[in-house]
Image 1 (spheres, rainbow, N blue to C red):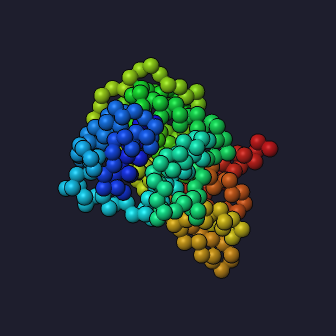
Image 2 (tube, helix red, strand yellow; image 1 turned 90 degrees about the vertical axis):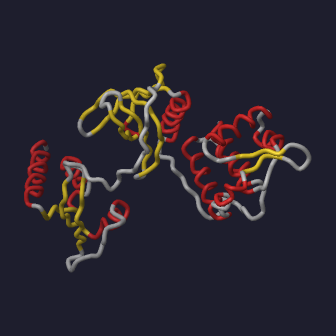
Image 3 (cartoon, rainbow, N blue to C red; image 1 turned 180 degrees about the horizontal axis):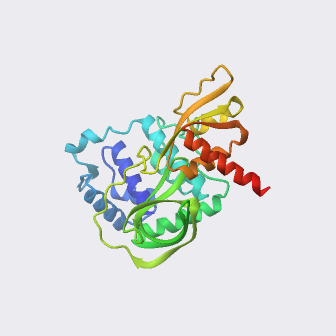
Length: 300
């Protein structure tokens, strides 16, 4: 992929004083003319690359850009390579490992990026996820829209979006783009997408805002409640609420104050703990949860 080559060329130029176009073409197994186009694309992205002809010549990052040439230490490069390797766990291929080998330049001080840190981003259904990622990547490369059915707590809808980013956060994969139904930028979780397809419709030319994670932004319907958990589920609390204090009280229970996006999903989540969780406050949430439990009981 072109993006892989661009990353690779930038990495090489950050590590070497200069390199010939022929060397780059051989390393990435492309034509001389393709490398020239890649260098032009890097220049347009704001990284100034110069070229000297003749013996001892080659391409290099311009001297006045030297402050950024040391931005990647060997240790930092190892983290980048490990991150690239983790993408293979999603795609089910070895394309990113091959890119890592090209980035490493066989340099002794680089070492192996996968000796101590391993990242597996795949879920149980690796095939389904990788297919979705491939379709979304193709849409972004071709500047096309995607359509899909989306399952959300508010109901199921059919959406068409202009995708701009694939994002891994909050332990899941998301696509971020302009939703033609809502006329605004939205985030969609890949596991909730069905019937995903690449359309023939081109994306509109828009002034796309910078994506900013809204993990700590609160919604208008948020709920805040105090819940008491039995100590036997402390392992699960450590997974789900890692920033919370999980100190036991005198009765071997753990009391946690939670903020949730909406009441319905809050009740659904608390119910998964069975009798190991009890809503303490506020009183109205406790009473509403009691009503939900009674309705479930009446069904049986």
